[in-house]
Image (cartoon, rainbow, N blue to C red):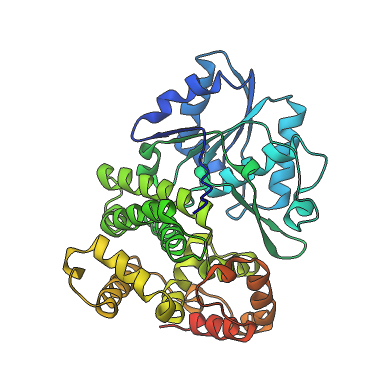
Length: 388
């Protein structure tokens, strides 16, 4: 056995851990670029970050022009702010879009190339980026602990998934207090994104005992706490467990990769601007139905870890119990199918072939224990379009 395992150098988890930001930031330089978004400014959360830096007389510049699905324009705008203000490191504060943008900026700051060149694999060997402190404000993407960044190329309508250890943040501060104000719809989308990370990483052909340990812990926490956080956003205990689960799932998939769900999800997000977590959730049941026979033992293992009543059941029965629980949580969180989300059928059919091509090109479906063909992916998209 030869296992490679990567995580940030420093990881702080739990309510109130933002108090350690100044302590960590002063080690990295004299001027920081804060990559955040307008919502963090409106809620006053951004003030917590800036006051923390001001308390140690650390200078900063702020970039908040981030879209829900970050693009190369967002990256270059933030990079220009970083360069023009002669910053030394980056603080990523917000949801996955902010974190992914910041990670891309950190790499481009030390490399004479473009994000498109890295995304198209025209550049595969590049310099270490500047330091990054990641502070997530949602419980979902796990970007604070992954070596992955996803940026949409608006010229090709492709989500560029870039994976390299140089995208891994140096420090992650996961303070669940920031998630207490997250709306129910965002809670469901990000929470199911984390569930997909945990589930896909467990059944991936690249999984190992270390990654599966994190995957299982994340799945159990999510199944127990996501409905609670969705139904009562002020449930601080559920919020904290979801933040930890999101981080655990991020660690798992950063090391074991994702599979078919993410491969099919990215084209939906790029072409129809569906939030990443929602597009993943729309494909979750389709993935389970297609892959079930190949991952039956895996699903049974998950069920027995999460649900005491699965003990003693056959693999088939235990797996069906878990699948039913996933179906129930998607129903509770009111996840629509693609048609129900509002995607036009004619527009969908017009790009069906491109979506299948882009899904396979991402490489993620190849991590499935049952790898679909191009035509099978098209059939799966059609099943997901009107699944209800």
